[in-house]
Image (tube, rainbow, N blue to C red):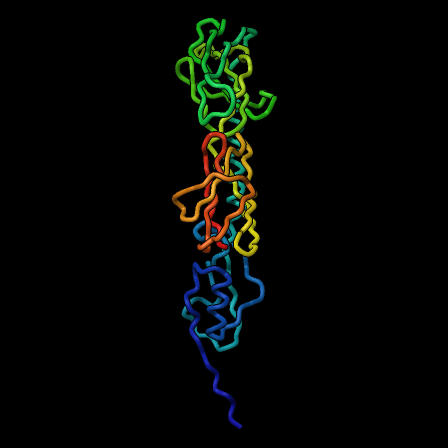
Length: 272
């Protein structure tokens, strides 16, 4: 009996492909791959991609023979770089903070233009600090009751605008950039900003003969929900409550709109 003729295939170019894609490609060529790939540190290729195959690409190899693949591994290096950047940032920030010296001098007095929730608010210095020859003001805004870890930012003039959504405690201090000194912080001013849309988490409905009963589940974690609406065409809206009924509905969908106290709104299409 004659021996079977051995078939050969060329090793395809799998360099740069993901390990899974490379294994699939080689399998289709009836070339087997060692179960475990060899990890090599390499910044020239994306982590998890093939950087080398043994034997080399284009080498003829008998069918069902094994090859070894080498895969780039650089995630640890990337994490190390990210950690290093964060560490240097923290060192720089606290070094900058410590380069200034706080004097036991009264800070300025501040107040906000508006009370309660707004889409933006102006905080103004109404009484200046006693810090001698101060060059400017800095402010910090924090959601915490403790201002010890507040990040201070400079602003020009005697006022600044707060427009980030949230519940903020605001402080201001005077500082002298030449002498590297700053005053005690000001009184606390509370500012409430809502620029966020309400969240419609679900709209439940129950069909009953000639009517459909709807129940809207919605939340607004800042200023709160003011009103509910529904529409049959997405253009004309009818004011309603979070539970409402529609009679003789002739469409397969309605639109539900929820509006918060500052007129931020969310619309959800409901397929019936």
